[in-house]
Image (cartoon, rainbow, N blue to C red; front, side, top):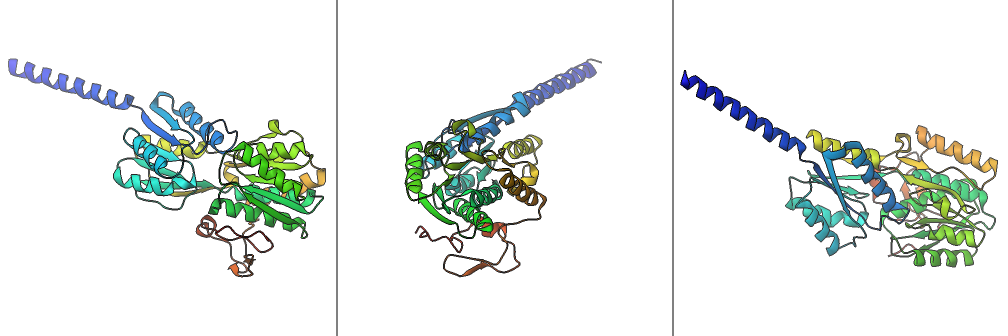
Amino acid sequence: MRYFEKLFHTVVISMFLGLMSSLAFAADPVKVGFVYVGPVGDHGWTYRHDIGRQQVEEAFGDKVKTSYVESVQYGPDAERVIRMMAKTHDIIFATSFGYMEPMLKVSKEFPNVYFEHATGYKRADNMSTYGLRLYQTRHVQGVIAGLMTKTNKICYVGAYPIPEVIREINTFFMGARSTNPDVEMDIVWVNTWYDPGKESDAAKVLMSQGCDMVAQHTDSPAPMQAAEQQGKFGFGQASDQISFAPKAQLTATIDNWSPYYIRKVQAVIDGNWESEDYFGHMNEGVVMMAPFTNMPDDVRTKAADIMQQISDGNYFAFTGPIKDQNGEIRIPEGKIATDVELNTMDYYVEGITARFPS
């Protein structure tokens, strides 16, 4: 009898300890890290990524614990920050193209950590890539610029000559040319994602050369604010920035990273995370546009029509024939550019006269 009592007590204690262990394990939150290229207060690219981080917290509550490091420079700093995070986190999102090589290197050292790299093209078993088809909204902006310009000179403030930015310069120009074959475009590179002073100065230089439609692929509202000061127009970057230039903003690209972040964190919680290459489309609600403002009704109608066609999958800007500025065919007639071609784009399209950066 005593034997069975001891056995019963042993089983009960084992079950109790197992239950407590399971509860402790279940209570341990998934640690989610974010590496940002700019400050969370840039009101553009990083701001929108941090909105995504906040919505992860809202979605999962105490099941997750998030952290971030902002304004991380490319190179050794990025590698150091990613490695530091990998020691204590379950999944890490690195939110800029220049983090590709550092993240790939660190991912090999931590096979049990999940790595996610934005806008890149190199993957591993424990490293995904993700991006948004922001060229879709940029093309609509080009359509608007072509219709709105009075000088036939539009311009673009670019951060770095990487495929993501080159692609959007091209689609912006093609959008403008689709509605105004006489339009020309100037480009200035500022070699920074976030420096309001440099961004503003670049826009002012371009406007002094006749540009009256200012587009940008940098992260502060400064170029559009400069446009407003001179009575010109511009487009918000990554976020609705109309509060900074209410008379100048025509529309803005709005990046919605939240659905992807929530889905991938859920996969970690569920134990079914997989490496993938995600490229979000306008029709998923992840690539959005701010309201069309400061424009005539006919321009608004045309822009809305193009946007709807893109969202429906009936209009794709990168359909051949597309030539580079040297006249070489890059996308043959009738062919739609592949995602690989879009994510490795290294040329200006025909009609852009600016010298391609070496």
